[in-house]
Amino acid sequence: MSDTTYQIIALIIYMAAMLFIGWYAYRKTVNLTDYMLGGRGLGAAVGALSAGAADMSGWLLMGLPGAIYVSGLVEVWIAIGLTIGAYLNWFFVAPRLRMYSFVTSDSITIPSFLENRLKDNSRLLRIVSGIIILIFFTFYVSSGMVAGGVFFESSFGLDYHLGLVIVSAVVVAYTLFGGFLAVSYTDFVQGLMMFLALILVPLIGVFVTGGFSETADSIRAVDSTLLNFTTGASFIGILSAVAWGLGYFGQPHIIVRFMAIKTLKEVRQARRIGISWMILSLLGATATALVGIAYFQQNPNLKLGDPEGVFIVLGQIFFHPLIAGFMLAAVLAAIMSTISSQLIVTSSALIEDLYKIAFKKVSTDKQYVSLGRLAVLVIALIAAFLAWEQNETILDLVAYAWAGFGAAFGPLILLSLFWRKLTTWGALAGMVVGAATVIIWDAIGTASDEKGATALTNFIGSVYEIIPGFILCLLGAIIISLITYRKNAEIEREFSETERLIKEKEVPVK
Image 1: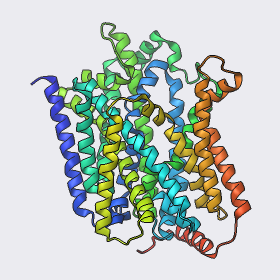
Image 2 (image 1 turned 90 degrees about the horizontal axis):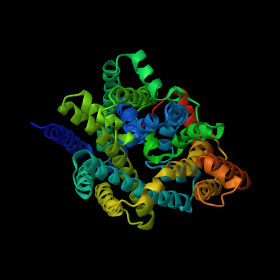
Image 3 (image 1 turned 120 degrees about the vertical axis):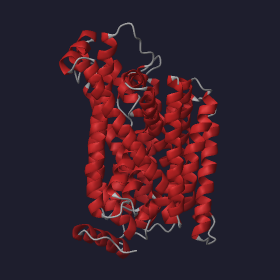
Image 4 (image 1 turned 180 degrees about the horizontal axis):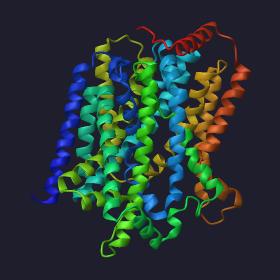
């Protein structure tokens, strides 16, 4: 058999496994809480790896190794910032959000948690946050579908549209039928695949390139500055890279995993597993790039076309075609895990946070689950339509969507969990100011690349927009909350009850 045949067999096995998991989760999904939040029954390992896989996407296996291959270790500051942010998110947000979201009327989405936490009878907070999630994640899903189409086009020479349809059909099938459980279980498997691939490629690569010393010498022969963490970087550049970690506090598709983990004990176990997975995976991605530099220096007759393909190319060189096929499947897993997580969060925002408010008619749980599945299909079709042509506008939007969510929701999640005096109007003000700052800051920064740019626009262009967005959201929420604060006995009771449950390590009974 040809190498391509082996690789296609590996991909078929992978996709069949994802569909089987979707069928298995479908059989365990009974009500809306099951469909949207897995019945709050995730174990530590599934919660940890599904959060990691939903987070990293193709950036972990392609974007980061490609950046380090070109520029060296100066690019790892983003990885350092993400690791710090993820740890703080697991340590501070995860246990409290798990408890507080249950205490506040068993909230199963971020918008419903904010509404129930702040006792917003106007429903405005839930509607605005639901709309933000719906709009941004529709484009996010679309960009993932673009990545899937490009993956099949570049790896197998398939038509871009055929690749897009294949990825979309499989990921929509298991998400639509299995809901949150299917997404979490498939993300767990996909996280394992990503982890194993990122460990195996550099491990074998170091032996192929002659060991650590020989590998380092080959890298220095290309450019000695590639092993330097600060060459070519400014203080503002490093600060902006590390600031990526701020985004974790406001990413709905990540923090919703915290709400679904079974117990506080398992939240702590999940933190250890998740951060270990993340550190080792990021080290693997970094080592893959460095091994790639050494390997192609030692084999000048071989050329690497796209630096972002260094992981894929090394996998094809070092391993049997069938194993290389599973390496390709790991890249596809990174793409699909993020699409599915974003689809289920967008579906929950549409049904739980918008439909239930717009149509007050009481439906059964079975009907809501059916509507949730319909929402997944509709959102996927819209996203696929947007992705049909490789529109650069969509890809540009994703570049700052992380900052948008981090700045709009991050400070509000922290304040809602740790500060009694946050109010509805404070949260709304912070959300709007944070999101608007990111959009405006990015627009001004883009002008720094054009003629007539001033020192101010150049400075703005060098600062990652999440920094001003996060700060202004935090200040806006605090200032307006202090102005509009009125003591509410129910809010005080729930805040105190959450603190008691966390202190006593209790699990509330449904």
